[in-house]
Image: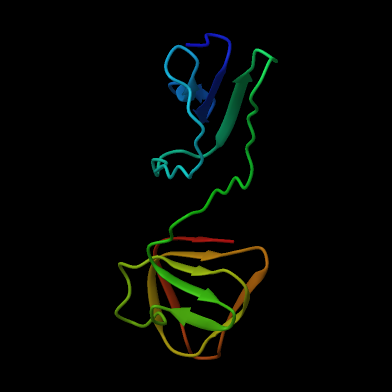
Length: 140
């Protein structure tokens, strides 16, 4: 047992501290380990921060962290690299969220969306005689 070695992290959701999670607890058996941690962040969170704390006795051992990645799962219709996944919006997709990530999406038929998002590196234009109906909001 070595009480001087700990590695832990804590997430902060919208300025509210979450519980500390020990990656290594010096009060127990110390082993060498590596791996990945995946966490689900609640949809209601607007901002997130990560705090890391490492305490070492300085005699032996080491700790290292790398390759932090924050990713989002968009559950809707996504326009990226001039193509749609899983399918383009239509007049029957009024309950789906639509996200134009990049490129230029030209609306060439009447479409419906729940929320219609346009990223800062994407653009959208509506062809003459066509329409976009957003049931909730258009966010640019």
